[in-house]
Structure formats: structure tokens, C-alpha cells
Length: 148
Image (tube, rainbow, N blue to C red):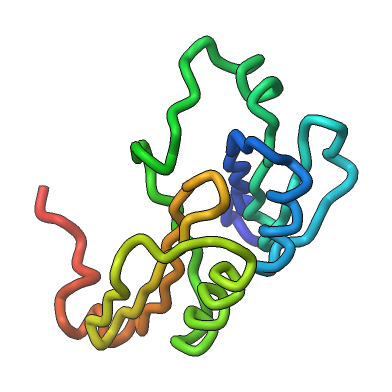
């Protein structure tokens, strides 16, 4: 019997202008619809058992906060990140996003032990897609905990 805590899940809530177009975009990137959490104003898209994007129409998103929805093509409040198993998988994910109408707003980063590219979805939300060789990162001191 393990004392390890159960894995936590994340649900990233994203305001989208066109729900059906956004569903098609995220399916092209590799996310899978979960119709248990869907209606005319929302669709859950799953990247894994623990990572989910909740695509919400602006009307539905606005029911959760009185704050204005910024135009993610013009402003950035956060950068979302997904890991991949290797460099080719990073490239494949980004290439699928680009083929589905996304953009690649920032240059790729290659640090040897870590490789990343990014894409912006149809609404401008930026996703960083990365691979890291954890052993190599630790060997370079990149994975060391910060001093207190």
C-alpha cells in the first residue's frame, strides 16, 4: 500500500469565440473530446487522464468571473505547457497545430537537454510543447532546487 498522494488533475478553462472550430483545432492537436462534460457552451478536451482543457464560449466563461476576457492575440496572462516523450513528438504536435490553423508565435528553443516549440490556438492562447532529458538537465545543474 502506497502513501503517495493520488495524482492531481488540471482543468484549464479557455474562453473561445467559436466552440466548434476550437473543438476541431484541439482534436487536430491530439486532444480527445469528453462528452460527459459538454453542452452548447462548453466542451472538455482531454490530453491525458490528468490534463484537460475546458473550451468555454465567452458567454459561459463570463459566468465564472466578472473580469473582462482579454484578446489573447494581443495580451498574454499565461503560457500553458505540455510535455512530449521526445523531440519528434514535440515537432509533430506543433505541426498538427499549424496545419489546423494555429500559429507559432515564438522561435523554438533548443538547449540540448531541453527542446521546445509553441503554438497559439485559434483564439491566441499559447501552448509550449517541450521535451526534456531529465538526467542531462540534472547533470548540468538545470534541475537543481533553488537555494532557500
